[in-house]
Image 1 (spheres, rainbow, N blue to C red):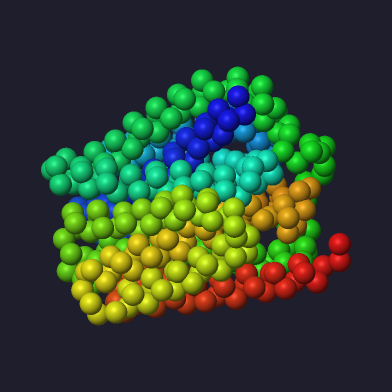
Image 2: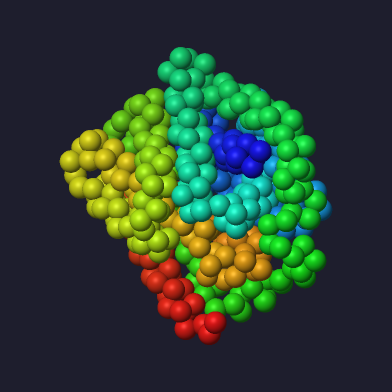
Length: 392
């Protein structure tokens, strides 16, 4: 039954990934229909990210009151409703309104499930768990591309994903008794002390290495989401690729993440979390450099795949090492704040690049990713140096 619970968690992460790449894939078509500047995709992305920050900071309170199973099922249902709302929207303002429940539906489930797996499963399972997110994120652009090339429009692309989310919601609802049997409901028996007083944000920030790991998460999600949101627009506006083709090509970035996490699960049997993170940073750097080369669309596609492969081990490895670095008793609080930091990066950095692209040029896309990567690597190494100095 414990393995069946893991399968349910995998399904929940597929549901998290399904809609994440839709906006970037559909936006080259959507912004023309709504007669808004291309940079306005950043506004929708920002609203979604604000919602996830709010809900992730409440994850500890919500899961202790309602249980992980109920929080997960309700969050997926909320996301499904938001995606259906996207599919029937006929104005940019309507998209912004539906972005609110979409963002709120993502944060708390992400933090609670990540902490559960970090405490109870080996690093390879964390990597494969996030591979499930990558499967969902990879399927999203393909589904959107199918709708666009079939003449059904971007609306049907969102509607297809909404239907899949509803099906996953039903699976999660039927699985609620299983969550109770596994003790994951109610007080969420993942930290061994449900009565422990939650840490305040000020207390968390004072923990050695906490600020640095928060910045690391900020940078990681800034890099990943900027790449996912603007890859299609970069290919269309800079490399001259058609919107329909670019929607499919952009999925290669998420396919790279998915493949990297499948492989990463096996590599964690030989490499530590820190080694996995450094390996990912090196591969990402290689991908960005390849994206910079003026070798046509083939170079750009190869760069996107490598950036995805490089991103693959970073996020799950940092999360899995949280109990080790900061203590199991503080892991839920730390992961909640890390998720909030990550979503803050999602909130501000992709829209910032939209502003840059609108006023300077989309050609700065790879340089922007490079600057974020350098800061991320520096902060992670600084975090490691601080926790090593911390007395046992």
